[in-house]
Image (tube, rainbow, N blue to C red; front, side):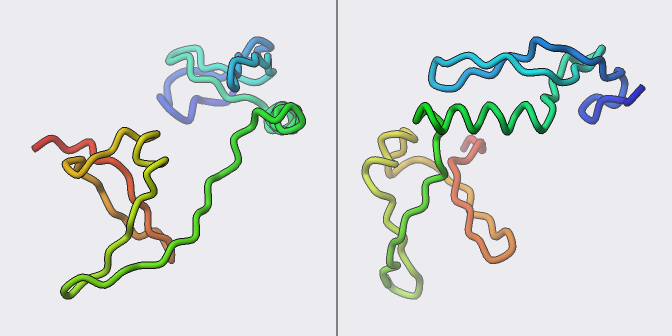
Length: 115
């Protein structure tokens, strides 16, 4: 039996009742579940079928990709976050953020760090 990739203690047991909720639509998938931590691992084919159906229904969220220009301020550059993203992510001028560089990508996310 395969060991769990998360807790590394439990065994993975085949199941047919993994629940995937996409915008209120419920998909039941086959996969494996850890006997110790209950982490679920849907089979790749099952996941792909669910994504295809969700796309046909128009409920699968596509990745957001925006094109913006940077502005210059003092000795650095400024990136403006569009107001619709600001509202969706509940951001304001006091929200601490983390900025990471992964390969040639810049990742900006709300910080979990508390002052």
